[in-house]
Image (cartoon, rainbow, N blue to C red; front, top):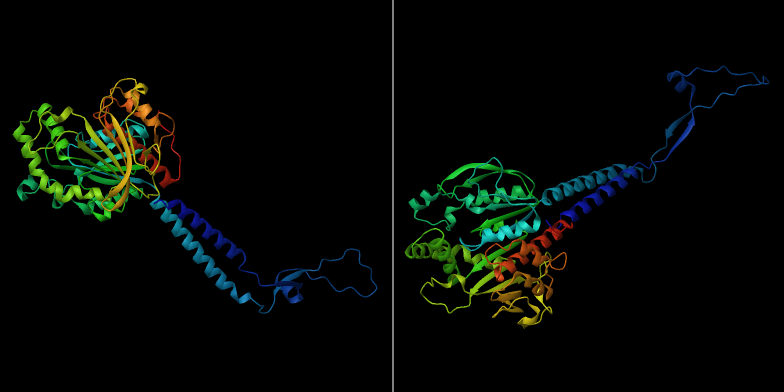
Length: 451
């Protein structure tokens, strides 16, 4: 897709060559000769009687000439070859232009994560960067999982379950198992949307656990597919321009689920444990391996000592968050602190912060991740005031911002979102800006910042 504009240029170039060949094709020489009387008579031209010698002529008649093709000239026999070559060039040009138009419509982003790992919050931060309040399709199913905004459409991959809740129970499989997904339909519909075509996408109803009638989805400028398996099927993975993985450690995931499910949904601790343990094997087998294929990974680690027991009170403890960025992509540049390629450990000067933030520290370094070169930026601890993001941002390079303080402005605008005071909010915002950077490089267009 990044070559779509190059395809257009190549197509137009080939079309120009075809035109030049056509213009130069018929170059056989011709000359004009006086027309014979028989020719003039057949054309209905009046014949003038011969004038005797010595009789003056007061109005001379014009000599009528007709074109006469010469005999076979050198090179004249190649006209047909010129026309054939011109036709082929025009045909190839049309194909290239059509192909570029098909491939150049939609930038596709994949976001992979387990349930309860912050996908919804990340989507809200990301769509804020592109403008518009994300909302469900108007007049449609109130249980739709799709979110539409000015430039983006977010599809929940749960909609591509081929087994509903009761079918999974009957077959004794979880929602994470590949046999519970319709990967053929997922591939075809993501491909169609990427090519600019509308699709009738199914809806998985999270309330009833059933598959509802489909909804029509138009092709957007930016398509985000989020869920458990966006990179699992190689065909779907190959359609993605940028891949993101939210890697939440077990200790943090347990703490978040306890906070959400016990405090907000009224679950018991045993119910939370059963939910976690029931998904763990399939998560490790089918979801977690996708992170090796991601371009950016937000890894959330505990700052407390891990244990075999679930820590009920860990939900409010500080976190260590790493943004792992693949090196060598043509579509985005990894962000770093201070000096590219250097190993940096940084504790901000408290006098430059508006409020004391004990334990706050940052790092920037390179390492190997599944055998691939990556650049890492890291934040540990919490900010006491979001106003201090502007100082942190000022020490960061290649952050894909359009103006000084854009990260700070985005985080202040979304201050009510979970994780705003720690590295999850900071790096989710940064990755959202990287999505914009990818969009601009793929489409070769500039996008104005949303303030």
